Image 1 (cartoon, rainbow, N blue to C red):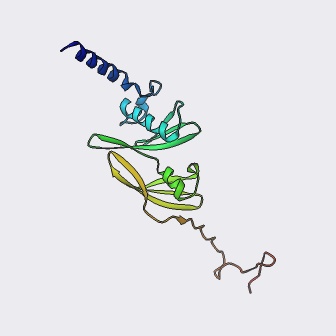
Image 2: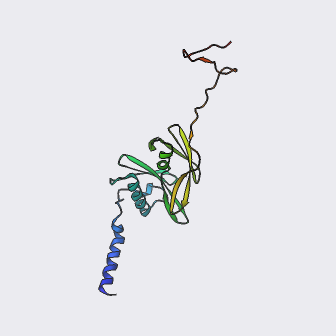
Image 3: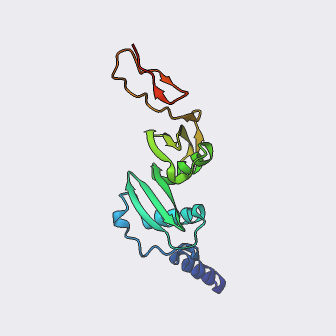
Length: 179
């Protein structure tokens, strides 16, 4: 091996050891409390994706929510990511609320998501609801609207009369007695 090959090999090893020079420092994060599937490489990938999504160059704050879900916070915003693995290949599933924010015309912070099945999530907020289906493979997942956006219906008030509620006189706003 000549000198130039040694130099290139040494430079390559230096980049490998330093994490390719582009990763953020995660030495402050205790990965032992971040769930069974988390390791340093996956955390560095999550931190990079979250920094881009949050448009945040500051230090991000991670929180493990359970069931391979992680909340990343920074710059007065937060996103939730899910780690999905299949046969050793893992990818980060983005926050469905980012997509639902547009469809439901509701701020992301006011939206609640709940898993309906392994690939479908229901999202509700601001008096509306819809379901989303994860489309894609292990290497990239996107959320697509799988139901029409519907208005939440307020539950009907239970009546104490067998005949039904009393009719009202709308001109004065007072109930009209029944005979």
